[in-house]
Amino acid sequence: MTDGYTDIARALLEQHVRHELNALKGARLRKFLSTEVDELFTVMKTLTLNRVTSVDRIMGVIRRTVMEMELDGGIPELAGEMALAVMQSPAQADTRLGDIFDREQASAFVEEALELREHRRRLISEIMAHPVYQELVSNVVYHGLVNYLYEDNLITRSVPGVGSMMKFGKRMANRAVPGLDETFERRLKVWLSDSLPGLISRSEEFLHKALSDEEIRDSVMAAWVSVEDRTIADLQAGLGEIQLQEFVVLGYEFWLRFRNTPYFEGCARAVVEHLFEKYGELPLVELLGDVGVSEAVVKRELESQLVPLVDVLREEGYLEALIRRRLEPFYRSAAVRKLTQSDG
Image (tube, rainbow, N blue to C red; front, top):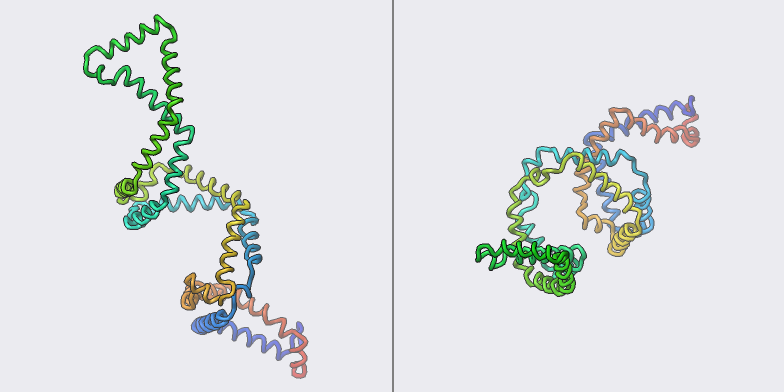
């Protein structure tokens, strides 16, 4: 007896290792996996979600792996490289927008958006109430009036020389009464300021009536028709490598902050709690079925991914070492020594 083994125990260990290695390859491995998937799904017909885990345990996983896990600085660099590889791939020049999002889908989105009439009215009202828009309207009306008075009204266009005379009169009046032009401008702007609420209100009502469902539908679909045959490369023209990487970095920095907000945790908890409310007392197999995971799907993916991986691990010697680490403590145990000592 050496290293805690009896001769019989060592011989049994070697036979057991060879048996396990042979069982974990080819047809035997596939049969083993198929059988275990069948057995597992049978068990999951009685196991419920509440029995195997809980809301707090799932939230713990989310908190540790999504919210708190330190992310290396290489992640945004890698993401930028991948985004650049996608942008430069031949598929960008070979694919039309309509190939990935057809006209029927665009129309369906438009129809759903048209149902949000209250949101549309509120958006228009908020835009109209914004100071920038009000300043824009004021400037447009002001310059329109000034241009009309001196250059573009019916009289100046119909009667030769009137426009020049009005401009000359304006210059002479300013010379005679310095500041007259500024006074006129100031009074006009005061009038605009007083009239602006009414102008905004009337323009808002006009937009509510003008932006009918039919008008929006026709405008959006006309815009869609103009771009659906353009390639993805055409649509991303002007977006260079530097700009793309900057957007990736901005997105990454946003995610780092966003994942630590109470809002994100609240949303995650709401989703998890709803999942448990709906499936907590149901068999796990029903949850898997509702998300499209069946026995056939699991078997196919194990065949595709796990079987080749096991072959590589066997070639590298890892599989045999794993089996030995698992079995050796048993064959060195006092129980096995007692059973085989008389023959050791």
